[in-house]
Length: 214
Ligand code: AMP
Image 1 (spheres, rainbow, N blue to C red):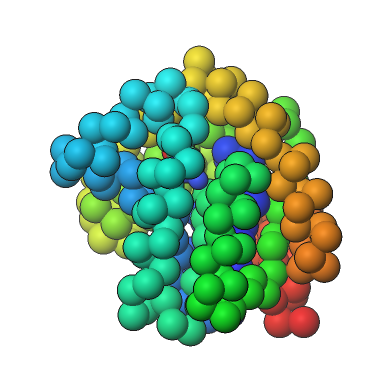
Image 2: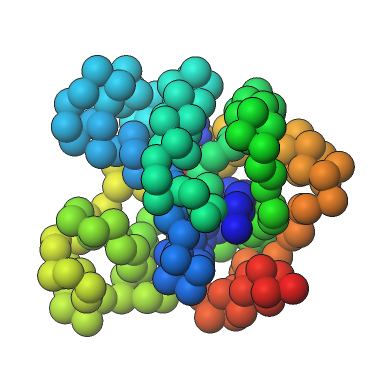
């Protein structure tokens, strides 16, 4: 199964992707995670991406399209994948369609997680991420059992630099500039479904799995 998760920062794409990965045994491909790893490793790509990410802007299309093409060619993607945070622009969506056509595949579902904007700031400022395994928590809605420590692997939790209030507003602005075009693009394919993602993690998970099992 090949799946795209769309939605604003804080909609829960990463969290839902992790549930789907467990149930369907397909990898989650998060361009944000790949870029953060590249920054950590101080690779050339990481150095190029850092200033865009720190300011809440999009990393140039050619960098993220290159990342996706390379990642999708790996063996663990042969039975499908979940794209989390890609595509974010029309040019990325078109490049993805071209790559899929070249390999003779297609996306099965595009799920757009819709959340009331008022909720998003609280979700992002309270988010904490495990530095070792990437598991996500929220200080209020989904706290770890031991403060500052990951339940899954015991790694240290941290707050992403771009989850600070000033950068969050920029990220929303960037998202809003692209969202309508992506929705229109995927609505035409007949694979687009929107899900109300304002509820609890469990409710959203059930709604998403219901679509995937349909
Ligand atoms: P995320 O972890 O998905 O919230 O992404 C964090 C940041 O990484 C974004 O604010 C962008 O700067 C960058 N990024 C991730 N995915 C993309 C993408 N598909 N296109 C451009 N920039 C991206």
